[in-house]
Image (cartoon, rainbow, N blue to C red; front, side):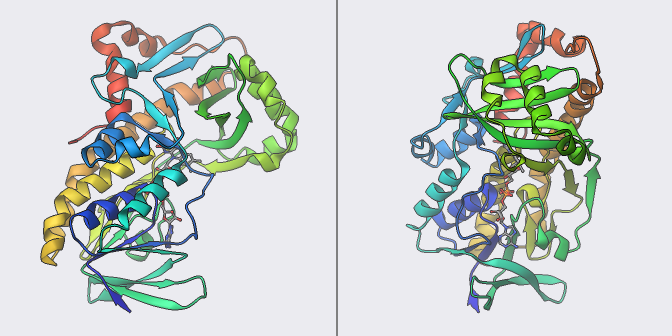
Length: 395
Ligand SMILES: Cc1cc2nc3c(=O)[nH]c(=O)nc-3n(C[C@H](O)[C@H](O)[C@H](O)COP(=O)(O)OP(=O)(O)OC[C@H]3O[C@@H](n4cnc5c(N)ncnc54)[C@H](O)[C@@H]3O)c2cc1C
């Protein structure tokens, strides 16, 4: 058994940043991560201007941007007839007018390595948190199993669950969630990148996909109607290849490299949010508190913003060794409405732009007038860019 002040379970963006921020303020932190390393293909690689500004405030942005990365300044939606700039970040007033696309594993490694210079920081890799430890109705620690299957206990005044979209701790705590119906799933694969090709969102009758630059490759998020993956598989990989080429004719040459279903992973899209993010002694953050749909690619940003807010609110109570439910409620209050609004916008985007494209069978797919029209007006056109770049809420 070990004792600490704050035990954080899950070393994704929310957990690692929170651990770094608390340890920097002299707080004893134990960070548990189930895997032995940070290398996960199956998550996003985006850092938005809002997140970069936060990292800049604590002197990390420049070092993060030393990691080889690509920069996206414009988000452009392509249809067969037109290319519509949805967000032009170069017009925003910020030191970082771009989304940095960098390997998330390298970002997490950098923060975790840097945190080791703070004496209170302890990272345990290969530590699978299995159970909350209760003291009456208060959480007082976590039981985890290490790589040798030995069981350990960490006792502390506060456990933070940042264990992602399938959070075991949230389930253990019995925190009820409001689930948003998702009508789409995502096929996730990489293609080689060639000169003259462009990324962005590609719409055509029957389909939509997002194409993101990942240095020498494209990361593709190809949207399908929920529950139709088996049908797709039966239709064969050649059919998927042909659809990629139809959606983005410029990428047809790259799509030729799609030869096997082993190259393709299915992401079951899911979105929800907890009604209450905490119990006495326990706080959920990031995807553990609100699973983000991949629409708009803002999940990492929101996880980092949650960590920032939690460190801001909880550092003092943690230093005093006493965290009350009121402190935890203050974190939820600060972060819940930005999350709620962005989840609503993601759902609208999905329902009003993506699903109609999937349902359209022939002819041309056009982005709706109400969507294109405001983007022509200087006063309105920067609103989506602002929202995409910084999210909502106190920064
Ligand atoms: C395919 C895909 C693509 C995405 N693309 C993007 C994108 O482009 N941009 C974007 O912003 N967002 C994207 N997202 C969403 C984004 O990945 C999440 O919103 C974000 O990672 C949430 O961060 P987090 O720290 O809350 O949780 P996670 O990043 O999920 O981290 C949770 C961590 O907890 C660990 N863990 C889980 N259970 C335990 C346990 N019992 N004990 C110990 N450790 C545990 C996990 O191993 C993991 O490291 C994508 C998601 C997916 C699935």
